[in-house]
Image (cartoon, rainbow, N blue to C red; front, top):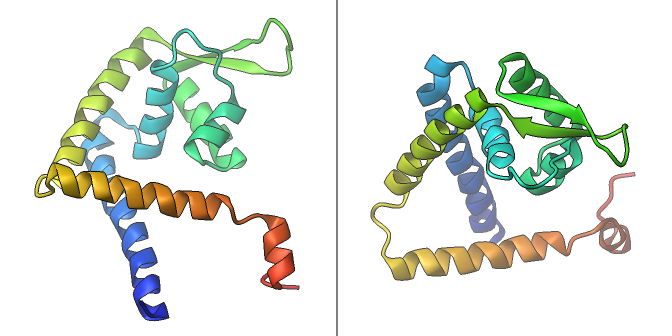
Length: 158
């Protein structure tokens, strides 16, 4: 496979993500929530027995820290989540879904499933399994790229 093919794959991956996100943003416009806010709300609502902090959202959803802060602020302002001080360390704010947030998270989850099913409707189970396997392989390769590797290979721009 040549470099142009690999670049096309990378562009297609980004395009797929953007189109799904755009579709969800259109669907969620009436409830004044974005796809990114919906993902954060679902993560919080689906973890009721676990302490969730901003750092967890950053790590598990791969969202930048400033974006996490903005998303939390908007979800709090809309009444979908609440923040309480952590008993063991007041510097950390535990995030929980309000009743309103849990209700909206259920609605969001149903719409996200509909989009996912539509996106993969023509895939066989075998194709889905292979796609998942290859995607995990790619993610593993990306996870193994670290700053030291980049320095060793001379890839960092000075």
